[in-house]
Length: 180
Image (cartoon, rainbow, N blue to C red; front, side, top):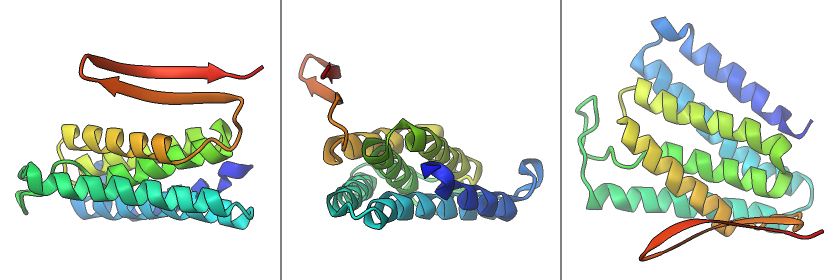
């Protein structure tokens, strides 16, 4: 029930794009923007509606840090977009914000809402490539930035299981802890 907020976003995205085979680059671009905005609104709005101010602040910070990091990296690594419009392709800001929102939703609302949110975030990345605004590696990098931001900044509301990414100069991984 908690993931019903995604249905309007999917319906709007489908109405914007039409049939995928006939969709224009602009249609995919518009659809990715709509779904991205819906995810960010849901990540912040659901906790607010539940009186969870900390969750809303953490979601907003997660999205802001992810988008800011992606924007900064665009200037450090100027990559020409597939459509040739500019040199701000790497990494995808839309995808980083979408995955930060999805990770925040998963952290605060659980996997029942997190899985549909991650599917919607993956759609954003796919649509950015189809719109010729990003290369596949731009959206993969954006997804990694967003997911890390969401997981590191948004605290799990239910502390029985904690999943924490880690890394150092020799490697990295994921640590999982459970309380019984």
